[in-house]
Length: 51
Image 1 (cartoon, rainbow, N blue to C red):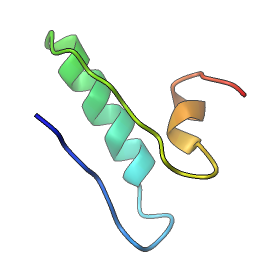
Image 2: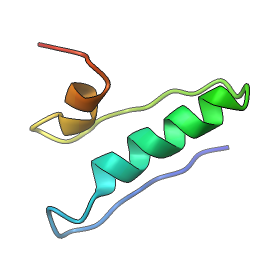
Image 3: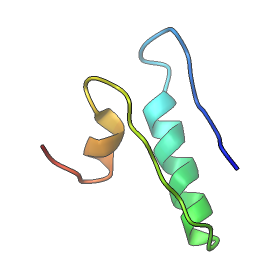
């Protein structure tokens, strides 16, 4: 299954929704790969990934 969360507007909560969904699916036992394609990398920051 692939889920893409996209919007052309910034600041609408895409990263927050993506990481929350990834966490919920992982907690249910699914294998999850979260790809953060944002230049700022906010979803990576929320996940605790630095640099």
